[in-house]
Length: 112
Ligand code: HEC
Image (cartoon, rainbow, N blue to C red; front, side):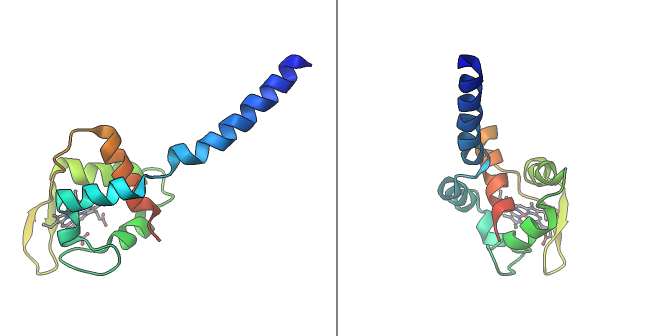
């Protein structure tokens, strides 16, 4: 009986913790996006040199490889086309802190 109760308690505790673990720290993510210059080309909800972050979120949210795609985009420096038609290598994020990058990715995908 005691173990059953303990198990129930542990499950409830895990449930309580889970959403917080997957949700982005929005303030930190937005500050990083600003610092890294993402927002110079991508606004949150309007088109600038590149598509708005909300459009990126709508495209990748819920896809199995969505997070990996966004992560790759900001760490690999592949060629992209700007709104004015010129091509350049996409910005590679400067921070090497994976947790920070993952938080940024999670935040982008959470935008609605
Ligand atoms: C010099 C301008 C510029 C900067 C700075 C920039 N991007 Fe981009 N980004 C682009 C362009 C251009 C594309 C491709 C076309 C589009 O999505 O509008 C793109 C594409 C992307 C995509 C893929 C969109 C898709 O539909 O597949 C993601 C994700 C992304 N950028 C995130 C970021 C993040 C995060 C940062 C900051 C680390 C950043 N970008 C900085 C210009 C920029």
